[in-house]
Amino acid sequence: MSEWLNPSTSAYRLTDLGWSTEHDHQFLPYRGTHVPARVARVERGGVDVLGAAGTLHVTYGGSVLAAAAADHTQHPAAGDWVAIARWPDGRLTLEAILPRRTVLTRDSSNRTSHGQVVAANVDLVVIVEHLDPDSDLGRIERLLVLAWSSGATPLVVLTKADLVPDPERMREEVVAVAPGVDVLAVDATADDGATALRQRLGPDVTMTFVGPSGAGKSTLVNAIAGANVMATNEVRGRDGKGRHTTTHRELVVVPGHGVVIDTPGLRAVGLIADPDDIADAFPDIDELAGECRFRDCAHEAEPGCAVLAAAGDGELDKDRLARWRKLRREAAYQARRADARLRREELARSKRRAKALRQHYRARGR
Ligand SMILES: Nc1nc2c(ncn2[C@@H]2O[C@H](COP(=O)(O)OP(=O)(O)OP(=O)(O)O)[C@@H](O)[C@H]2O)c(=O)[nH]1
Ligand SMILES: [Zn+2]
Image 1 (cartoon, rainbow, N blue to C red):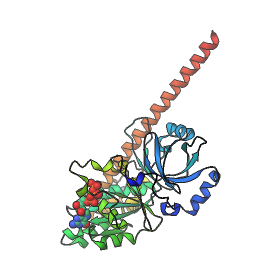
Image 2 (image 1 turned 90 degrees about the horizontal axis):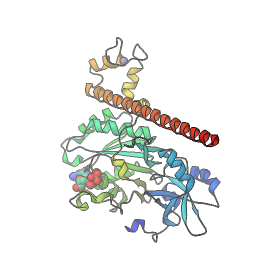
Image 3 (image 1 turned 90 degrees about the vertical axis):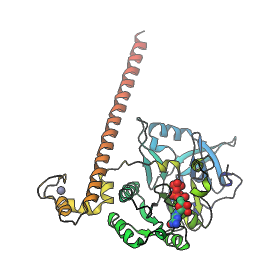
Image 4 (image 1 turned 120 degrees about the vertical axis):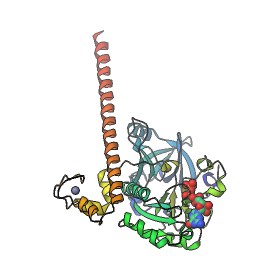
C-alpha cells in the first residue's frame, strides 16, 4: 500500500480537501457524534477516507448499505463528503453521505441498476486532448456533454502544442466546438502549461481530468502539483496495467491548488445524457433550434428549419450537426433502455408482492 493510504500519514486540513462553510451547515446534524471526512477510494467492503485523523479505512453503516441496495447512486463514491461514526469497539462506519453538489455518473452494464456514481462533488472537469495527433472534436464534444451533465464546469486543455506548427489555429477549431468554454493550448511538459492551468484553479476546487490515454492527464496533474503524484505512461511499466492497482490514489490533494479525483470508473464513463445536457454543450444549435418554424422540429427535413438553413449556408458546420444528431440519438436510445429497465423492475416488484400475498393467505388458510 502506498504511503498515501497509510493511516500513519499526517492529518488533513478539511479546507485543503475542499470543505466549505456550506459543508459546516450540512454537517450540523452529525456534529459531536460523527466526524467529517472525504472519500478517497471505494472498495467492496468499505472506503478509505481522508480527514483530520489522516487516512482511515471505514466500513459501511447499515442505513448506507440499505440505501445503496435500493438505489445504486446512493452508494458512496470518490469525492463524497461523509459522516463517520466510531463505535465502542473501535470500529469505524460510514453513516451518511452529505448532499452532493455534482455527480459524474456512468451507465452500469448491470441491467437492474440505475447507473453508478463514479465521482461526486467535482467542480471542474478538465478535458485533456492532444493536438498531435490531431484533436478529436467529437470526443471533446462528448466529454463536454458529460461535464455539463454532471453539474461541473468544463475546461479544455489541448496538450502537445510544442509538437505542432500552428497550435493557435488548432485551438480556434476547438473553440468553435466548445462555445462558452475556456480552451488552452499548452505544452504539458513545460512550466507555462502548468502555470496557465494553475491560474484556473483555486485552493478549494475539486477537479478531474478526462481524455484519451496518452493525452497528458498525469503529466498535467504532476505539473500543477509540482511533484510526481500521478504515474505517467513512462514510469508505469510496459503492460500499462499498473495504473489502477490497489495502491492507486483516487483522490490527490494538491495543497493550494485543489483536489484531483481520478477513479478507474471515470475511464469508462459513457454517456447518459438528457437532451438538456446536450443543449448545454451545443448552445449554438440550441439557439438555432429556437428559431425553427415548428416547436417540435426534428431538424431533419422540416420547412422553416433554422438548423438546416444554417447548415446549408455554412453558418453551422455540417460535421458538427452530424455529431450532434448522433449524440441525440444515443441519448434517446439510453432513455428508452432506462425506461424498459424501470418497467422490468416494476414488474418484478409486483410479482414479488403477489407471491408474498399468496403465501400470506395460504398460511392463514391453514
Ligand atoms: N511533447 C509533449 N509531450 C507530452 C505533452 N503532454 C504529455 N506528453 C507526453 O505524453 C506521454 C503520455 O502522457 P501521460 O501524462 O502519461 O498521459 P495520460 O493522459 O495520463 O495517459 P493515461 O494515463 O494512459 O490515460 C508522456 O510521455 C508525456 O511526457 C506535451 O504537451 N508535449
Ligand atoms: Zn429545425
